[in-house]
Length: 450
Image (cartoon, rainbow, N blue to C red; front, side):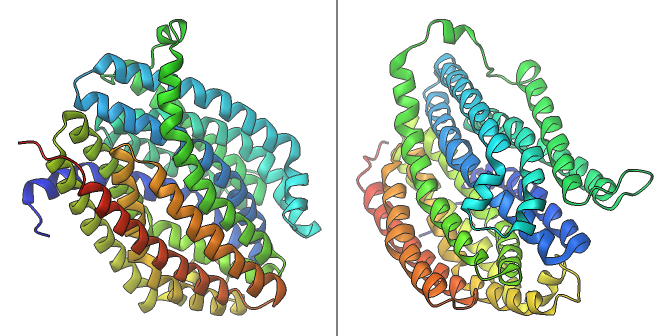
């Protein structure tokens, strides 16, 4: 397929700020893991790693890849058809739904953190360190989820720069407070893992405050609660029609991954720490895929709203080529410098963690381009209003393929965490190839308009 300069520029104009936002967003967890690893070794990494996996798995299912996807897709299509008032009404409805979901989720984490960790199979020393982290982090995640829904509205409008700036601000605050509160610098108390949670929560509250100010005073579309007084049930159905399948897609993938982490932690803190550090590094690498997927959802949504299906196809194919190409570069970095990357997250004395993590990272290099194809083809399908196909593919690859192999090799045979990454690579190759085939089939059916 030939790439057109104008199309590439349109994709990059939206994708690059979105990629920056996603990378910066993930850097919150990266710096937390990095600093607590230097502070407390594999036990601290395991505690923070397990806590964040649990919290962000469900935050993503409910909001980031649930309600927020519905908001972005609906706002993008209404903006494309020049119906700004309806776009604003969908955004307001999505924000109100997020408020209710976020409050219930945060309270659940706050009240039941220890029980959740025991259910995950964590050892008592991990629970003692992780439970206070989760309780404090429950405050930050409430505001983070609210901010995510506002960012989804801005992205649907085509504004990916403001969420990028907010993420940069959050990171600066988080890094500074991590350094001060984890290690106890410049007269601040040495709080270790708890300090990391406090730093992240303060940063997320600050980010939410900034986005609220922008939406209230600068944004062209706003949250307007007058629409709640004239609530239309059909609009809620429209939002749920997109959000629920997207949420289920993320649930199919993330819950299977979370169960996998519960299985891995039974192998001990060294194996789990190696897995967690590899996962953290990989989470940075697939941010380009997520960023381009957001651009694909927005641009395809705009063109479908305009009924310009040929241009929608052009944006979709260009996004896939660009995004998977960027992730291929990450593959080379994983192969060339695995130990250097792992060393950033742990003390040099943790030789076993470094060696295991390096092997896992090199295996992860194989899955990167396939992961990119899966994310971006799925994003393009969501922009066109097809959220069922990504869910079905994710369900098959996660629950029919990945999880049974994980249970057999890790739980029953107690094999090394290296096998986890072999299984994950097979999963992503299958996932990427299948969703690309279904994506092409779906987009070929779209009618062409002149």
